[in-house]
Image (cartoon, rainbow, N blue to C red):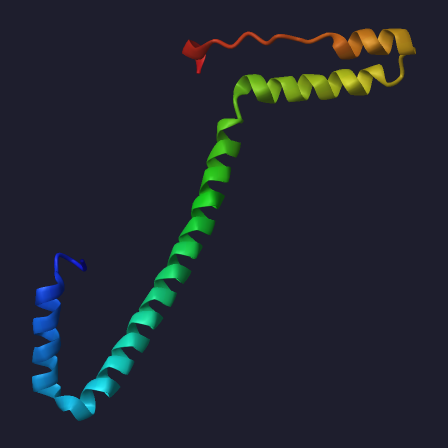
Length: 111
């Protein structure tokens, strides 16, 4: 059931609590225990929500950092240069310049 405690063990604990605390104080103690458990669950759910938000932010940052490769950076720079230089050209040449891709050679041993 709960943490390996079955129904017979739970009944023994309830009977022991009744004997120790008495029938007058037992309802008050059980109400306080229920409030404490509810507060503990609320704090745990807030902590989990905060961890989920931070985890998603870290995951996004990691994926952004993984997209920074020398090839991607060079492609962004070259496409920006091609689009800027092609803006003053006639439309026929502009479409050829925009469709032309420059493939950068990347040497992994050089880095």
